[in-house]
Image (cartoon, rainbow, N blue to C red; front, side):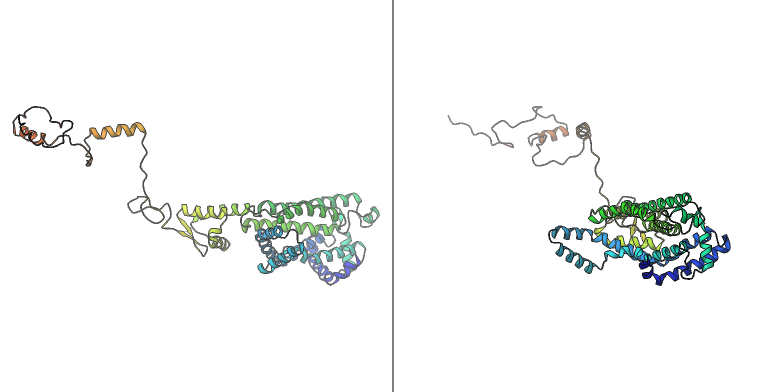
Length: 428
């Protein structure tokens, strides 16, 4: 512990100073020796640190997205050089360098707040040991030792002996019950934070070892918090529980408003955005415009949810633009010509498909057409109803004379049609 204290001594004084400043504010409201004053001071310290770490959190999100994008390429490298670990590592480093990604970037918020965590741990441990530290003098030390959070002293631990707990003015049962509840809450919040990341904000179209590692961490981290939590003072448990709750809320905000492409969270986000656009025919928020702009720029590389969003706009007569806005489209599939006839996306009249008839309708329809005297074009292969020999007879009948014979002349078999040459008298 002395080694850790010496390593983080440069941060111990600033941390103690921040706690004292918050304590002066809350002490005036709740009393200087109450657990509310000291507990809220620690909570305010966490909030201040996490606000300062927001730029690193944004960088962590970008690094995580970049790592998820590289997972297919990383898997190819692992399969290609599975028997050569050195070459595999070299190719991985080359890929990171070409894409400008860093696997350690996703751990930046945790690494950045580690000095504050150890500094707070050392401050609370000094309070339990009755030692002044930083700007905490004797009067503040006595005040902090009197502070109890739900019956547990600020500097008490789950593993403390009954004599040490009694010296702080509390019972061992109260300390262990309070610390056990806080450890359970701390582990549960960590588990829920990791679980919502895996179930909602991970690209489900890519199955990589990275996803398996994240799934394993979902169960490993809560166990680690439970094991190490029994050695944390109550004040440190307050610190870590507060930072877990902050991380959970921060991640819920990111998943809701800026989800990972291809994830279930993106599907829900695009459904909400589509509903808003249908009601208002526009995209209002700058963040939504940036999302629409990115989807339009992808072109054919859009995922399933993005294609569904674009197609939904097209069916409603809207079109997404390259700048992220949405306008009414004149060439939408549902557009109509001036005369009311449906048109295609190119503006040409939409071809109407004939209604299919049943077999009986086709048969009766053909007979009815003939009975109605429909004019049908005659081809050269159609036989005339009247031969040429009958035409004079028809003309005579029209003039009032009766035709001779009364029967239609027909060509005999074996003879050519049309007028025949008179037979010459046979010579006897």
